Image (cartoon, rainbow, N blue to C red; front, side):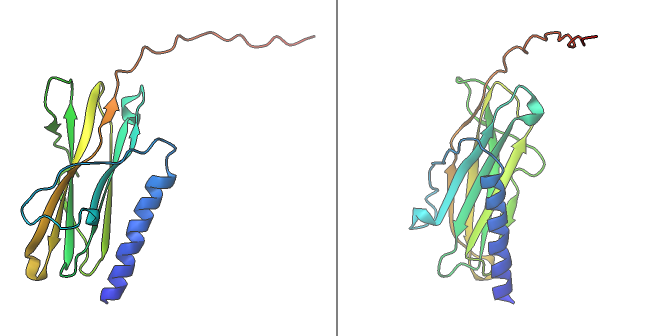
Length: 179
């Protein structure tokens, strides 16, 4: 039963990764960040947070940021958790502020026994001009849900510039037909 869950968890991670990788031709930026020292993992390669896609547009509904978090189980890890929060800064003089919206800031947990857990979150309808980044928090849980370690990373910034003025409309005349 545990092996079936591992296979399903791995398959879900691959499907999510494929959707991000093959669903866009935009540039990919990798994340960077900082660790939270309390029980922080000894191997920083056991987790990552990446801004996979930053779509700009003159249409607010088409603006988006896609963030991926990945966590790898340690020897005593039973389950892993991940939480993605989106932050916004409207100008360079103000600090980033966490956006409160449905689906953001919720902890997502792997099934027991999963070795690699990947979570992809796309946020759409971004305001402009503004800068966005994600804070990704990680948890490694042992038996009985005991917290083994935790860490936090910050992704690269997704810049949403002020849209330019709309292009002027030009009237097109139908081609005249020869008689």
